[in-house]
Image 1 (cartoon, rainbow, N blue to C red):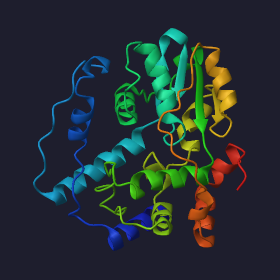
Image 2: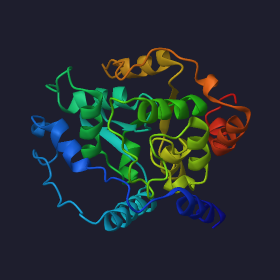
Image 3: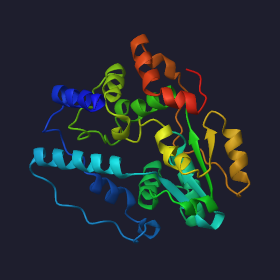
Length: 277
């Protein structure tokens, strides 16, 4: 309850009923035109009618996010031929791992495909029901140092000008693109973990449903790619290095107070995945 009250306080102070609507249907159609044969229904969904009233749109958008967050158990991509499934964790080699599994299911998937296209196709095939049938498969995922992962989110979505900004109408627009890193960390720390967007949700939440049901998931660290490549090689797969960025020092983004907030926010990730703070 305290977490929800903190979120409502941030929305009341920084939110708006009139932030621009993000047109995800247009993004999907524009990016996946020509890729229909790799989609479940071999076609793109019809674009919904736009909401002329931004206030109505904000409530519908927020309601849809809350419903999805509270309902979802997990999120994995299955390659039946290899008896393999991958638990997707955004900003932790997600694009590369998703491409590797999609390539099994669709051998003619072009290597020239963009990272955005890989992720949009993965969205269409992601399964969220965590059941006993998964015990007959081998599961794996990749995690990343929590502080580095958070900086990666900020750099990709808030610093870059050549990417679609997906947080315009997220929780009534409390995360505008103009946010400083310190303010970004402060505001997302006020969002209950279950309601956080997938890009900055604690990584433990992505594997919790599997661990709770005693479904084995091999966990690899992004910082140790050799172990992941050895695992994939056993299945005849390569680890493609997609969505790479030039090296940078993520630590320079953190002031003392922001570092403390981030460490507290991801304390369970540090403990579960054995990362140094």
